[in-house]
Length: 325
Length: 248
Figure 1: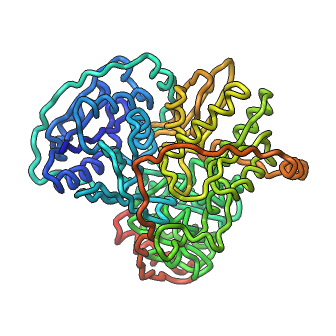
Figure 2 (figure 1 turned 45 degrees about the vertical axis):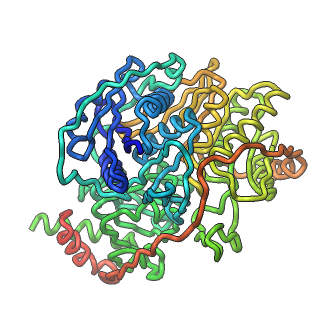
Figure 3 (figure 1 turned 60 degrees about the vertical axis):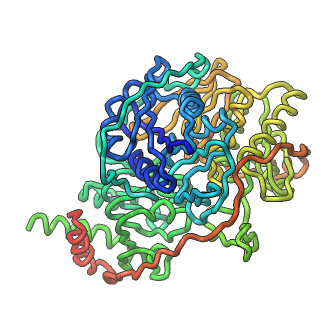
């Protein structure tokens, strides 16, 4: 039985935060049948990541260098992974369940004409290869059996806590040669606008989210003030973006951003399942709502039954008072 | 485009755990595809030509196809299926064949638009498989899309910011919600959709390697909600919690 190969997601050498979750899941999976975890880094910029991959259990790190891999391109990455599968013969290939991870794995699967399981939370490897994967954004779980020569899957973000191996080792390095047709350059990045420094919805330690109860675009000013006070960021529900009060980039939920802050203030948010699945990885949820029966109130760790327009400024004021005091 | 239960609905499973219980569920276009349909309508308004909406689904999906016509599509095509055993590989094979049939009759589409992923199965791959089978470039996650001089200009969000791609036509783009705000149908659009001819193509395609055994609801998150108080007087209790958690 072949190894478990992890495709390391990175952006010009900066590893995706979820990469180590995939390494951890791969270690558990490899342990079920006593095979090695190996890693694949695509592009010379990723060479520096190799040492850390050993600490997370990679026995070998296969590096791929090519002039068409200076920057990310879904077709190029898919082609590299497909060629790596042929050359290395792994039985399982894993990546992170991010948009990019799912994209390049689907590209590889298309080339290999193999099944691909996106956003897996559990693997069972015995006579058959079985997975549990997220459907409806997490509203349902699917148990599925996969029949294939090589099993391609992504690990659902936040479903595994990244942890280093108990006995870390220095990964052996190898260089894998690939042949890339220039046509893969059709989908290379041609320009980018770097995000301004600071927290993002996906990485913020505090998210102050507003829903339909905020009532207007102007109503978010108080939420912004609280977010600023806590070094956080403002998020919103789908109802808010549908009303045009906030940009879709602020939307938390199944078709928006999945968040995992230390604290999520859910203000005037009923807690429809689509929003809940985007917020449920939050470590603590404080709901502010006039309706004590709202889904978000009954699912939150803490709740205040109050009008958010009175409550949020009062919280901001109390924080300032204590800091001044 | 895919017919899915309306977002926000509680999804229940049939007693045998094999299917979604569709009783009491409303259906709609999957949210990302709704934005893809809007993008198609806008491109036709800007550049002329016509847009076709295609779905693989139960015969009832004709309802969503007609809705798409009411908001700007000119033609509709349904690939009717009678069972749930359409894994992503099989679905992509059927759509690839259907696109080939349509293109053989009327010439190639400049652009194929898909949703980034469907709201129900969340497979992230049907569009990519179709693009590869047709030998066309594709990027997923489009939050910006314009077409000029035979090139599709695509922008999307990434951890580091926004990134841009230029895909020579014919191309394939996976659209993400947020690209635009889908319009509502006009009365004229509704009337046009009732009269529109919706073509049927029998889907063909060998099954892939993924077989769904069971669907289940995830364990309920049991939360003993601590009510910190009622009204603004609860502010000190909230801030106490923030101090306990360590964010203050």
